[in-house]
Image 1 (tube, rainbow, N blue to C red):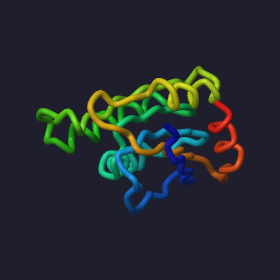
Image 2 (image 1 turned 90 degrees about the horizontal axis):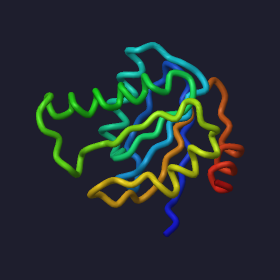
Image 3 (image 1 turned 45 degrees about the vertical axis):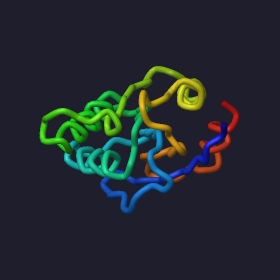
Length: 140
């Protein structure tokens, strides 16, 4: 079954707004630029609150994004038990080609108890590149 794919461009330091619809969704965070740790924490909080239920990090500081989303989800539940439907598996694929990351997202990334209704490509970069990234995702 094919799910919609949404591209969101975010420049370092800018905060995303709103919720992603339909949620829940899986997210590929494409980090072509780095940002301050405080900003990364704020974006990670938004990722958790906006309905992400599977996060795949790629690019600059991918492992720190993986950790930041894990921490934001833990904090969202006051460091207690996270209900199964709110658990967010995370992974970092910093050394893999982006095409392999997209293939992993499309064919292997699945939440253990929640159906993920769409994919979001969150592109952290100084300049947007929606066309190329959406085409690469479609080709994976």
